[in-house]
Amino acid sequence: EAARALHGGELAARDARVVELTKGERVLERELENSKQDASKLQRQLQLLMDQLRQSQTDASGALLEKERALAPLTEKAEGLLRSNAVQKRQLELMQQDLDAANRRAAGLQAELAAELARAE
Image (cartoon, rainbow, N blue to C red; front, side, top):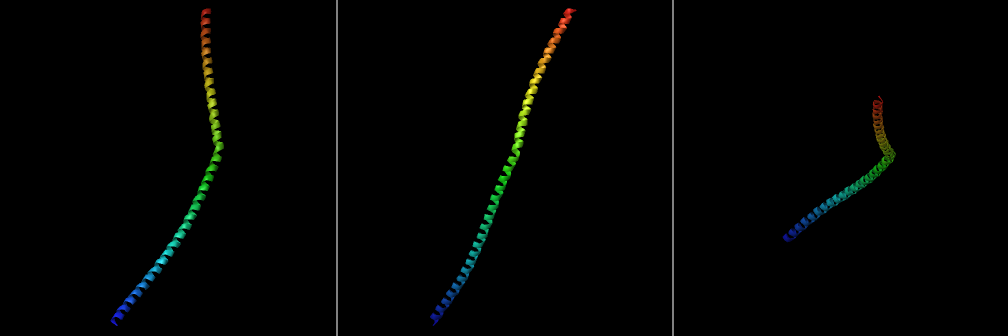
């Protein structure tokens, strides 16, 4: 009978351990389910953020394209003005050279006239 009591005590201890392990398993299963739910929420949030990022990139690309379209006429106009300015500057340089040459000719003619007048006297 002592053996039976000892055996009964072992069975009771084993049953208690099984109950304890079962409770622990349920706790772990709940934690696993919670972790899965959290991971699912995080996945949805990540997907939302990725969608927002793609939309932001699309918007930024559109804004950049619009900026380039708006600046193109101004850029062309500025380039045209720079070309026109360069042409006018060259024309001014040529006119200055012509004026210098005319002044030299006038000075030469004045010198000749002064020499003629000096000889005529």
